[in-house]
Length: 284
Ligand SMILES: Cc1ncc(COP(=O)(O)O)c(C=O)c1O
Image 1 (tube, protein in one colour):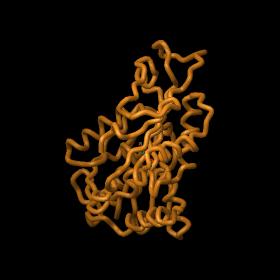
Image 2 (cartoon, rainbow, N blue to C red):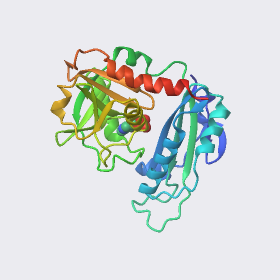
Image 3 (tube, protein in one colour):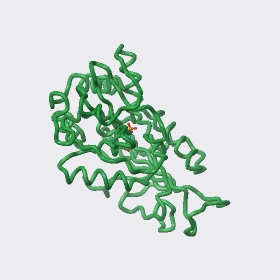
Image 4 (cartoon, rainbow, N blue to C red):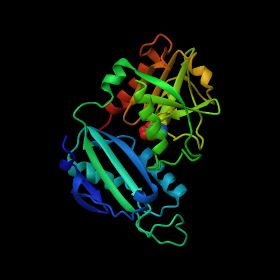
């Protein structure tokens, strides 16, 4: 896939992604002063669009970025412009361009808006979903507002890279002995048939798939508990899986080089993935 064939929308103008150049004084460049969303496109349509736009509005409010727009139409337009059937939308809104200064006090800035849709030639998680992935645990040293989906992901990038160096694909983050989330995913454990996931807080991003799965599992009559998960529980779990827009439901079959449960993709992860598959199949 050549990125130059992707049509981006940058501040309302359509142009090839590789020809979008942002000013260095954009606060996204100087301070990672921006929020973002990643949406999955199936059958030419965004999945869980309103969950994503609702979370985007919450991120914008928390960051005090004034972008008075819903973005739903802009997302749909960009998908159509790129004629993508299977892929992902990336949307980023920065506070705007201003002389470099930490404070944005009394600045009336115009947010910079980037949207692009990238086609997937194959399902990005298919292989990992089949085999499961290896995980490591890692101290969660991120800041205290992980509920805001900002582009300031340096800790996530460093920790994910460390996981890769250790031969793993994801790190499960631990703050004060309890599980927060993955570097780019939410975490579920399964014990005795009960799905357990950390509750929403400022230490995790409220994942769209996390909520979809909680609602869907409960509606299907399964037990789901949102509560603190101790690090030690990870090593006694029957199953661990991560959830995210791109990874959907992916089992962690090995953690810190020890097998999780039977060390294979388990029935409860498959059941959770089936809920997603059914919803995607039902998309019109
Ligand atoms: C830190 C973090 N937590 C959780 C998630 C999962 O969110 P979603 O299910 O909306 O993709 C992501 C997604 O990228 C993430 O970056």
